[in-house]
Length: 492
Image 1 (tube, helix red, strand yellow):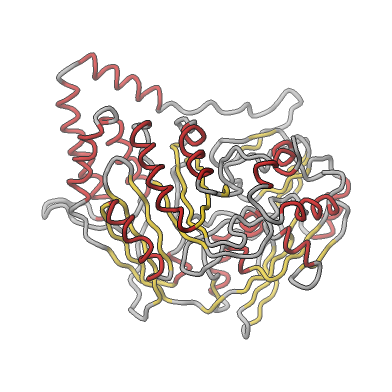
Image 2 (image 1 turned 90 degrees about the vertical axis):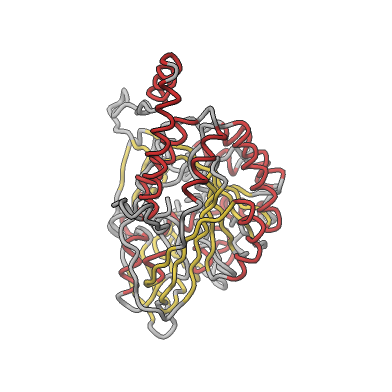
């Protein structure tokens, strides 16, 4: 997953980088695993059969339902529905008409990258893909007005063309800007807020047909409630972003022993502008990634190779799932050889990554001092109970903000994200991981899987009641609430 980790394994090895290192692990694992499995044909056959069963493609929903409506599914395949109507307005006037007349529930969709059931509807599915791009910008203040349907991947180069970049970016940049802020999408960094922290104004189309301009002084309560609004307060047609001048950044990736990483993390997250790390379960290692402003010459990072990395970790798991000590010994032997890698480029080019391998995810945001203790518990639980896990665990830090439904409301948070391969079950999210997060006072990422309902959430958000009252005023008939959101905002 960390394409910048680089080492040539031997002078004769033509493969470089993290990809080459993981290929080395794969070759060694295959040789040892072949010997082990060759000692018992029955065991080999049983293991191979189990892996073939687990590697089958998940059952896909029918393309059409009995009424002839076509399916919509999210990226991970964890949610789907058969909307009776689909809408793609090209203007605010069209959008207002749709919101007033289309069959409900009306659910806006960006890239479908949320893992929860925020979008599914048997009513109207609404995309803002026809309402994208930069509307205007101010070169003196580095502000830009951006249409809600603009994808982050397109916004980066568009802002760069006018000498601006966003203050921070998430790990993946396929989301729409409206969808990203609606779910509290974030990156990582010292004193750096989630994406909605850079939003100084929103323009909101409501189910009653109003167009509202909202900021800290105009419609302030709506601004506070709807900045992170889950698409339940209206449809965000425009956002005004407080950006910054383009900065050149040094990105450094290095392999660290897990225990060393955990001990040093409080210092590292304060030392670097952006810092995060990935724990590799059953390996004894983590990968630390840092970004710092520099004046060094550009040194591009080259192509991402996440597929090769993840599939090598998967192969190691496949062969040694039931011999974790040997699995760890092989991984440690190779990971210990890795030397740090550094690349230099504009910050907006380095903060986000390609993630072509589909997965499922649970992520909670914990009080900053609880992050490391909770991570220790999560890792111990996975390595004790779930030897099938091979995806890295992502660890980041996010500054406090004042949006009422922000998971970072009035507290700096440390996030922990646990993943599962899209072909494999994720029941351990809820049986062993989520209880740990909840014991440590965590708030779930709005776009990631969790089991919390309105009574649970009301205990976690100081302004929950006020946000609910604003939502009720804006959408008294609940035209934007699907079944999932009824569970989030109501008592159901």
